[in-house]
Image (cartoon, rainbow, N blue to C red; front, side, top):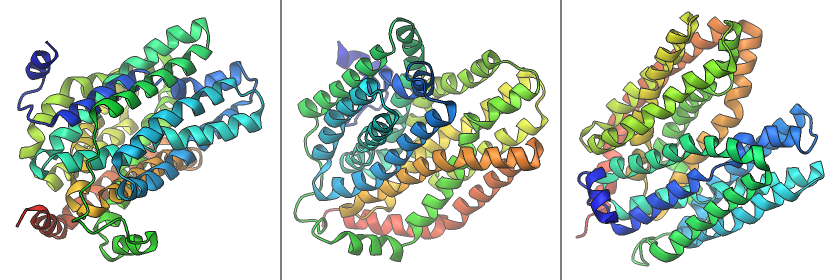
Length: 410
């Protein structure tokens, strides 16, 4: 029955069994992503923290997430994918409950930092596992399915969390911890170690030596810098966009309606995009994604009505879908076999940093120079990122061909 449904939903479903355990676990885990969207409300209403203290706690979560991507990527290469996944999924529930039970601000701060670390420790290991399991031509589809699963859960979880919060906020922590633990059981049951065997040189090299490889081969750093700028623009959708809408007399409910377009489009278009992505030129798609992102946010400068704000979200969401489907596959294609975890960790850390610095930068531009400057800067940034992707394409494609030759037997 499950196999039949899966075949109907996913054409060309030649992805390996292990991948489907990761995919199903991602849905379960993200369906229980209750705490973070409501953390600020919980800390201010139930723990008596000020808004600035609650914001600091969220920043500490982001700092933990940033570190987790770098550490998780390195450990995934050294220890293996499976130990990192299991550590993340069995430690994060304990940290989640610790945040829920903590009363003092200092304890909440420490627990939140630890929670951010263990919550995202698994991400580079999952991305590296997909690269281990799926050949280059199938990676955009595989990463696209994971991205769709994340967003399906993210679209539903806040609705469930709102209902649970009415009863008792502690239910959010228990439910989130439980679904994370269940993902760990999925891994325990169906995900074997996929790290390349001892015939591949690797993990014995020191961290300094491995980082030197990254510095000598700057394509990852260039790609990561472009992702940081892409993410900085994207983060305006959750911080400065609602402020802009409020300045035009629109309500929080209006913002909720507009931002819901984002989730609906991802759920609707994510799978068709993933199924088609293997036929797309990697860097052409990324350039188009960056242009759409910049144009979508740029149009916000002209928006005064709900309809125009909605149109802007449609445009930048199309860019988000294209970019999120292809970008992790590019990182996997650029990665030496023995450094897949570290490469994915560096790339993931850029996104964590973007969600830490993007709101600060966007808020500063809005305060100091006004909304026209902010949205104009977003448009210019999109153009620059698009040009950057096109400029790096020839060297990156040569590098990808070299990596594929190393991966090919004989």
